[in-house]
Length: 88
Image 1 (cartoon, one colour):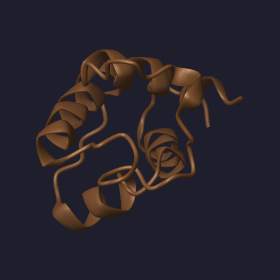
Image 2 (cartoon, rainbow, N blue to C red):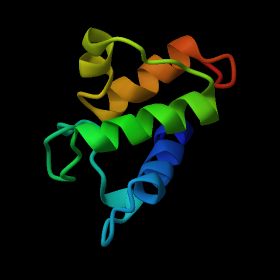
Image 3 (cartoon, rainbow, N blue to C red):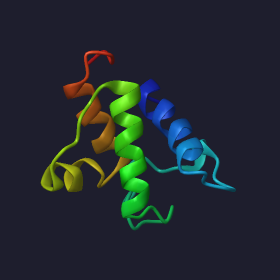
Image 4 (cartoon, one colour):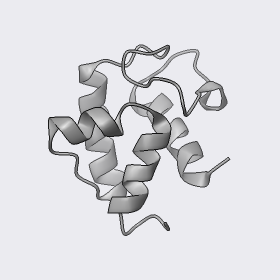
């Protein structure tokens, strides 16, 4: 598994306090917001803050946010493309 995706899974479980969710059980290609994890708009705001803090990547527009938060794979790809902290 991709190191960035694994790291994101762990951070998301912690940041969103996803009780009873094992990071390994998160499907990186499943619908992210509104999917099985029950992630909502408040959770997205928390993720945006975490991503800005941990990866120095800003998601500051709704259209980009909708694409980026559609799946964990898309989120990881966006971070790779926009962060100098993560190898491409």
